[in-house]
Image (cartoon, rainbow over all chains, first blue to last red; front, side, top):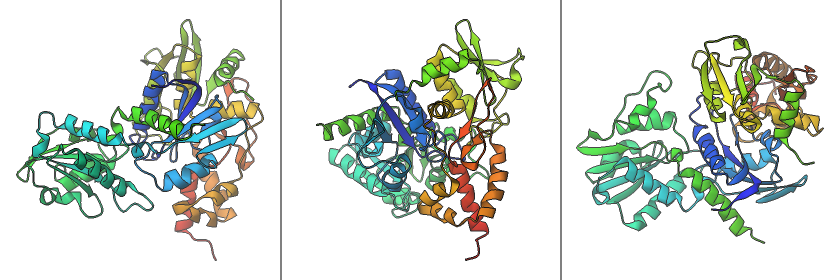
Length: 270
Length: 194
């Protein structure tokens, strides 16, 4: 792995005004990268939390700055909001003695496929993949969001490896609906991996309710929200179902951030 | 200009700036200790260690509710956080009061520029573009009410930077996204006459 003691890394997340789980993986990955000592500085910035995108550049001492969006795909935030708020002029912005290098979103990296496979294997240990249907679940219907396309792309890549009996994409709000998982799949074992950057209401409750492994709760996600990931396997509708937490919470995600920095350097090498 | 925030922070502490927002900064034999300023004399505080612990202390208030705005005056009580050096202190303060030491350094260096509220709104796209329709009167009422729940000094709203020699000030150079989101609610609820 490279070493950039004279550079700073800014990881940009969406954040939330409702719960701390949205920004938690972004902070976790930043702390991990800081511990590794790869960068001289590591900071986070958010759209919905502080530090904001308008504040974060004040926090940086170093003049060589990499920005990695912690998003699952290209879309409105990576193409419009982040460049606008950071006043970026393209992949490389030079301003006031600083060079700001805008990398691709974490979710775009080719190693995302490995990460999904790692998570799927981890959640269902000892379960033969050939007798398993693997679902990659996206949100769907998001305005200007390519996350559904990204989920389909990952499904294609996993299929090409020929490990799982079946690999399928499904969505919360568009066809094919994850609620119909038992009709869509044929294998005795089913592994479901949410293709989200963070855990939250979608992974704690919405998807579990659609899967039929949880009841809708009357209020906000409870303190025991994580329990839904601890009760594997679920036996229902004649199948054995394993449910993983959001892919963005995977510790290896920190390496994908670093991979995106390396990919940026490779693409923009003088 | 080369920035060196950690050194600046050390200099501010030497100069007696030992308070930021609701957090008191104490120099100890082997580093620093932070506590809620209200807890200065309490002996029953739960000890936490290291900058990463600050994130979790800053996230929830006394009633365990999430604090989306870290400069709201509802920092939880009952803890003390030990940090081994100024580097850790800088990181911990960035969890308690994100970017606030950095904005003070920028102000000290003369590079912190307040952005007028209209400029912030005019930049918005997508679901927040509608905020441009807020009237000056609606905006005034909203700012007075909404920002009353925040300890920052609104440089963009004509407030003068506080001059308290024992504190690192909390500066707001531009309306935050919470306020922009609030402006959307105001416009949606009560559209201005066209």
